[in-house]
Length: 453
Figure 1 (cartoon, rainbow, N blue to C red):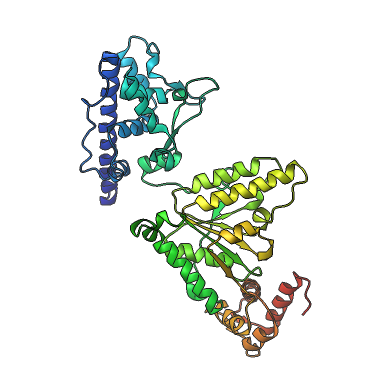
Figure 2 (tube, helix red, strand yellow; figure 1 turned 90 degrees about the horizontal axis):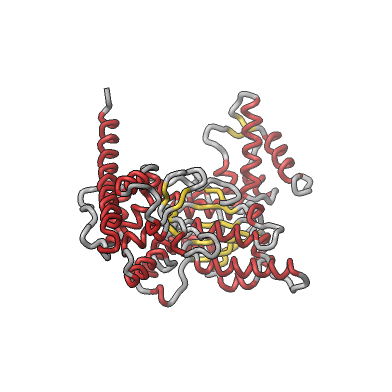
């Protein structure tokens, strides 16, 4: 017996598929008219698209939100149709032709794995305009870089083989929009060479961040921009006077809260934060680093993500004098990155241990530089008090104020020490943290940096 939730899910799915059936039915009628009447009908004005009222699926919402006209709706369903029904075009075309493939005006190609008909730019242009040159030129504008299909990376024309007409390229819909329209969700990008970034999150709160008051004030200013930047640019008309996006430099010793701050900004502004793995971005091969960066920014465009470049010195370091081809291309990579960060509409955070290592061209163009200093005694004391789980008890001889005064540790150091001491207590099947474990943990942590307790 179906549960009420299952019935609701089925009903919702039925409404969504009904929207697609209506759209595919309209497309089949357009194809039929174009094939049977050929260029006699110059446009598709006599075949209006189905009513979009009452549909609550992602596809219908997208059409309504962007006020798509008839031509744009046709291109959108053309791109999506092979993902809905693999045999759709072959079925519709063969129904109206004695032999498939004897109507070259429709364009179309076959994929490597997918053997069905896949529409090209020529398919869209012919369905929209027939042989009317003026209408054809107008239809081609739907595939230019100025159209929001390209700007939002909804769909694009694949580059055709060299020497072939531009409109013979296959219409490709981005996988993200395929998922959005069919599943009403978007799967987060998978970490790898094509997307060298991982999403970072935190369960901590702003109160867990222990920093000097002036640093906190700067972070609050940054949070205000993330929340209200769009209003400032668009509703208040500042887009003509200031560049989109925001660029900020986090600098200071390791373990002082730079990554945590980036995670908290995402958590409290509802933005996804992606930490870029620079070891996968920077390549020894000429031109590959720019390609990797382009893939990253193209993926992030229009997502409103926060991009966090940790240990940014590897990529944003100072440019060198040109001694050979590698120096020349390394400088080009820095220039390319500067240009992409300046045009990115979201927040870009560069984090470094040493501000002096970052190229001056970046530091001059960043709106904010936020310093994360080594914590002082009062801050260390707060960090120690906040660090322990509520179930743990401290041995009477442990004086956290004395520990905070004696050992100059960062928040990251302290959390590593607390983890070590808690594991020691658990190994003894106790919830009491011993002074000897605490000192052993401190000694272990400082030894990593060659320091002796």
